[in-house]
Figure (tube, one colour):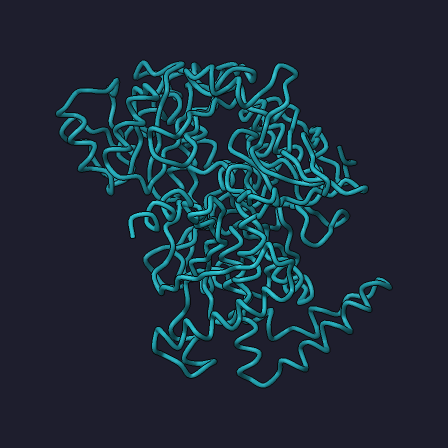
Length: 573
């Protein structure tokens, strides 16, 4: 457990959080949205945001949805945030669904969660029409974020908000006066995976606000910050850290228009903070270095980083002056990037911090609301995920001779359990309340946590040695021209594993840097680089076989590699 380093507001539930933010930041922008007119933005104040939430919540209660489950599915947008808080702040249980799921999985999760209403965007109109016809779910209300007027038994979100406004003006206070029980399920989230494997995580509002307070105690954010929302909002990392946290601090939120628009969006929205996954930052880092190198300034910049890092040790920060051009190209107001969801390459973290843009690595699970640990301005150790949050206890179970074992966590952010799955809940949370993360880690003498890999992905050799795929992938991904990689164990006839890697290369970079375009030439070059990596490691860790491709690996919506699907592809060959 670490010290609190920043003062923070205390919340009992999400309604309390929103009310306190609106009280302090009423006329400040909660959202900054693009309009159809180039260069023109629309600001939605905290006061307006809360009004829309109150109107929608009132209307939902009057539809008979008090204490019912309500699903939300769609791309990141203002209406998603309004819907989420309208459900949690006095109506019922919110069930955010993955926007990238195929129709059959959406149908399956709607049935499993027993939702009675769903709020959705135009993209899901076809599947919703099918569900209306099939009548095989508990759905009573279909609410469209896009329809101007209701049609064919579909309710327009805009019109229902207007109706809720009239109801409040006529004295209806059912939603406004609704009391929140912070200890019962308020949020149901499905873990990633196929519908047969995914579990429904039950989170309480106490779970979520405990995490918000922990984040506030360790990472400084205020009303002058602007977050660029990029990761899908249904995912608890983006929902807690990229949506609820900025709202709790009076910050504003802008929506990224897509992967190709990130660089432009950071500049035009004057973003100061971004929450994302390592693969995005690692790609950005490579592009920055490539741009610097193309201008013949790599030696100059490297020298500047060395000088500025020395000056930092004596309290002098000149990074914004030395690297002004880099800051301008990335976004002059960008000050903080937070990475989570997978292991961040320490060199990427070091690069951004040396350039004067703070990069922090965090770690968590859907089951812990989600953040368990993170770095901050005070507690940073390269390669670690920082220290456990103030309200949490962590420990290592069954550690080996290297101090590595499964990471366990205990505290107020730990889920209530898995919905209708007592067996899985007992497997994950023991009788003493410790949640078994399934991740292997070690904790150093100062309390910094180092994740070494997923327990279920560890390759155990016949000699008893453990290979952590993520550790090798970080090394492979540093090779110029490599976009990403997947390390796995190929079972041999003798019953042992051959450490192998599937490597995704960038054709353009391979041509630009090495002047090669043929697949066999590329494989030979990458194999030479792999042999160089092997020479830096003990022999049992040697990568002995590679497969190369220019096709992206299969991923979840939060850009995590779907390892079981990649293994299935390899086994089919």
